[in-house]
Structure formats: C-alpha cells, structure tokens
Amino acid sequence: MGKKDSGLTRRGFIAAAGSVAAVGSQMTGAYGDITRRAGKLAVLGGDPVRKNKHWPQWPFWDDKVVESVTKTTQSRVWCRIQSPSGTVPTFEKKYAEMTGAGYCVATGSGTQALHTCVEALGIGPGDEVITSPYTDPGTIAAILSARALPVMADLDRASYQLDPAEVERRINENTRAIMPVHMMGQPCDMDRIMAIARKHNLRVIEDACQAHLARHRGKVLGTIGDVGCFSFQSSKVIACGEGGAVIGNDEKLMDMCYTVHNHGTSRRGRTEVIGPKYRMNEFEAAVLLGQWDGIEERHAKRNENAAHLTAGLKDLPGIIPQKLYPGTECGSFYLYTMTYKKEHFNGADRATFIKAVAAEGVSLSPYIPRGLHREPWIENVLNTNVYKKMYTEARLRQYRDELACPNCDAVCDEMLMLWASGPLLGTKEDMDDVVDAIVKVYENRDQLSKA
Ligand SMILES: *Cc1c(COP(=O)(O)O)cnc(C)c1O
Image 1 (cartoon, rainbow, N blue to C red):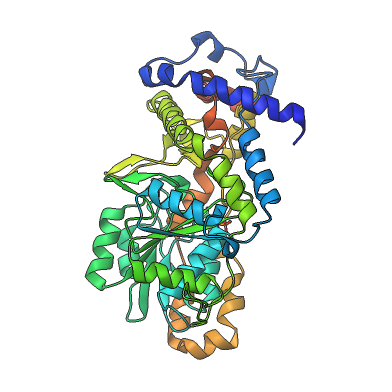
Image 2 (cartoon, rainbow, N blue to C red):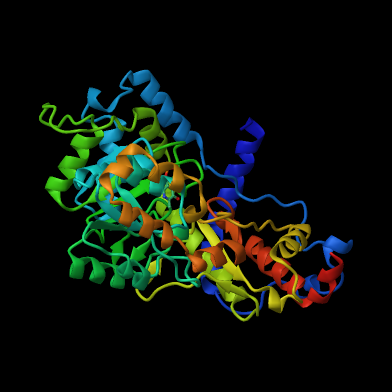
C-alpha cells in the first residue's frame, strides 16, 4: 500500500467516526433522494447512483500500528517465549479481558486455533465432530488434522447457520463435539445448540473466526461453548495478516491448549503430549496491539451501519437480510449478507442483478460457491488408510449416503454479500448509496431483461 493510499484510508476512517451520532439517530426512515432511484439503469447507460467515491480500505493501519511493529523489531523480542511481557502474552491478556474469557492462547491462524482445541479435547481417529458445510475450509481442516471425522449438518436457509435439528439428527455413539460456525459474525442458534450438547454430553468448540466481539445474551461469542476460536487473517474484522486465538474459561483445558500449541510442551517446561507448533509470533501481536484503541469503536460503527442498511432494505421484496436468532445483541459484520429472490426481480438471475448493482457503483458478490460437502476432499480422505482403518465400512457408506445438504446448496445459490470489514466503516451516505443502488434496480426491474 502506497503513502497516498494510506492517507486516504485514515481520512476516510476519521470522517466515518465523526458521523456515529448522526447514524444512530436516524436508524429508520426514507433513504437518499428518491430521484436518484428513478430512470434508466446504469447498466443500460443511465446515471449511476454512486460515482467517484472510495470505500474505507481494509486491513486498517495507521502510525500506531507501524510504531508498534517497529518497537518489536528494535526490541529483538521476536518470539513469545523470550519475554512474559512481549506482545503475544500482552495480547492474550488483553483479548481475554475484552471478551470476558478467563484465558486466551494466541496461535498462528484460526485453523490452528481450531485444531489446537480438537487435540486438547482428546478428539482423534474414530471420533466425530458435527459442523457446517458452509464455512471456511479451515473448519474442516482442523478436524481432519486430528484424523477425526467432520460430519456436516445442513443449514437454516434464512440464517445461513447450522440447523440445530439437523445437528441432533447426526449424533451417534462416536460423536464427541459440535463445532458451530458463527457465519458472517452473527451468532448461531446457541440456545438450542447448547441444549443439544448438554443433552448428549458433547463438547462445543465455537468457530468464531468471523465473529469477534459479537454478543449473544450478554456473552461474547467464543465464551458460550467450552472453547472459542478466532482468526486474525487479513480480511477479518481484527486483522494481522495471519493469526488466531483460543479463548475459554476452563483453566485445565486452556492449559492443555497452551501445551498442544507449543509442540506438546507445557508452561512448566515439560514435553507431555502430541502437539504441533502453532505459536503466534511477536510481529503479528504487534500489529494487533497497534490497532487496539480503535477495535471497539470500529465494531460499534459496523453495527450502526448494518442497522442502517437493514432498515433501508427491510420493506423491499426480494432482498431479505440474514435472519438473526433471539438473543443476538450485536454481530461482528465480517460480511453484510442477504438472500436474493429472483422472482421479485422479474426473474433476473443473481449474476444479472449483481451486474446491474455494480453498474450503479456498489459491489455485491456471491460468497462460498459450493458447500464443503461438494468438495473433492471427501473421497480423497475417506479412501486413506487411516480413515478406512478407524471407521467401519458401514459408517463410511452411511457418511457418503447422508452428504446431501439442500439448504446449504440453496444458500450458496441465492446469497449476496457486501464485504464489510472495510466498507461498513463508511459514512451514512455510503450506506444510502448501497440501499439506493439496490432499490433503484428493484424499481426498474423491468429493464433487467435487457441488461
Ligand atoms: C477465516 C475462517 C477460518 C480460518 O481462519 P484462518 O485464520 O484463515 O486459518 C475458520 N472458520 C471460519 C468461519 C473463517 O471465516
């Protein structure tokens, strides 16, 4: 990123932060100028809703981030075990405090955090973990790395989250844990998932890799299950390139997470169990600490802007924002997502709609193209010696027979998103542009057959 770009980013962010109060006081009502929505669609040569404007860029950085990295460089403390007051131990303390968790162990990625938890819970070959097919490949990789079996349950089509009834249906005598994935940074149906876990005596590993600081019934996501995992990969709402963390309240389990992630070597200096080496390095934590002061403000800003978008779109037929569950207090808004129903848009398919909205100056996109139940890992993994040895032929046959996830397929086909880490830090006018572009295309949907 050049000097010029970074200046733009900072100015954009300061301007955005200045309008928090204004956004908060106008959550509902009419948006923009009605005349902006009339007339010819830009895709057919009309005047676009939005032009010559920039979105706040992501990942965020400013002079404080640079200073923090410089300080780490100069300190020669580049590895977490060199000093108890280094950036990684400091980050762990601060992240536990921020989330209300008793303990935190930082890792090199969200996938590493998830795998650490699977190992620390003693889940391995022959065991099964129920999770979502609609997620980052890292979720499945964490289970496979322990040679356990990821069992994918279908979704609630309106929330894009695991359907608890589908989870319960897939529990058998080898099931050890549920790994709910808080997609888009919004809480899963945690009331029902936790009830199912208690009833069947299962552990819960929350994949909160998209869900930093999201809250459900007074608890920060990641602190509801036994352990919660986060990612700080570049695109996430708190970012350091690659990074991750486990949080939790069970001291013994969190101590085991430390041991596992530290090549099996405990805080007491003894090498005790099987473990990879997944330590976060001090430069990654320096980037995280350098952006600390703005984290909560950016979280609040994304929520205010998301509420503004949802209010603006709520009466529009054919665009249905992601369904949230009772108890949801706030989300991280890693992505702002909605379901597109083409029957309300003169039958225009999603790609045509996206093209028309893009011509108006707002870029929406599909997200995950197909669920993980449709990726080639399944046959490749099920045919390895270890899986053939550790799971019965009957179980693997049943596994193949029960792969269908029709709601996940529907979500992949009809969901639309606005990247939110950066764009949702924009101004109220930026949000109005999004609403106006969508509403304009809706109001002129008869033109879409020519687009
Ligand atoms: C990003 C992500 C992961 C993996 O995190 P990495 O840091 O990329 O390894 C896992 N699950 C979900 C839901 C994610 O979004």
